[in-house]
Image (cartoon, rainbow, N blue to C red; front, side, top):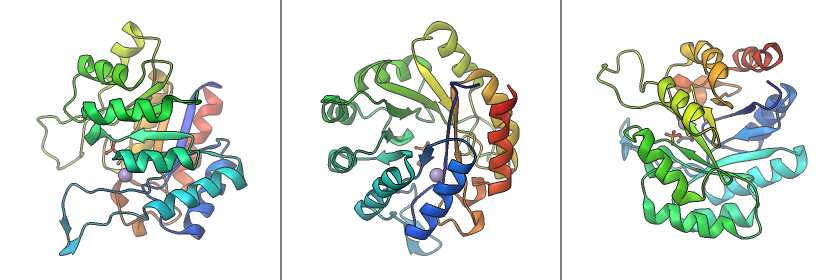
Length: 249
Ligand code: PEP
Ligand code: MN
């Protein structure tokens, strides 16, 4: 398990106190990999009668850069445009992330590759689109720079099941296919977006660790107060349980 990755953190960075509190906690669990979005485009433009929450934006990236510096951590942060990518590059964010909804935006993938190719060894994270086939996913990963430059993230796909229980379905078969036929790629699993249900995250993490190169998990000091994805965000106790699995396998 030593080489397996564990990214933990809130859906989004909200303010200095929140992100430092969560980052310190995640680090205390034995990983220096934090996840947190600064740009939070939502699927629905109006949520509960209010305009969508767009996250802290560039100010959030600054805070994440501060976390990297002060706590010696490495941060994964989503980007949705060339402008945002350049901000992440300028602040040396360790793991710029292409979100599921941009997985097949070929022009963006090519631009991101150009922006991050120069003088930089670290990988980009490519999240699988909910309707992207494994074949297509490998093509998109190639556009972004190939296996040396990309960590793939399985985060659940659309299924015929109704959404009474889960938001998406984690595709363990797809992960097994990549591990078997494309072992050159690192692939991590996101059980938070992959289910949409915090009650399932621990069990899914346990299963995911048997197969994948690591996890990306949403965790918050007050999960119910998270402005985004609160229903799938776990609390500190639950995250510590997941981190302990890394010692066991
Ligand atoms: C995220 O990880 O912050 C995120 C928005 O997830 P996804 O792109 O998988 O929906
Ligand atoms: Mn989220």
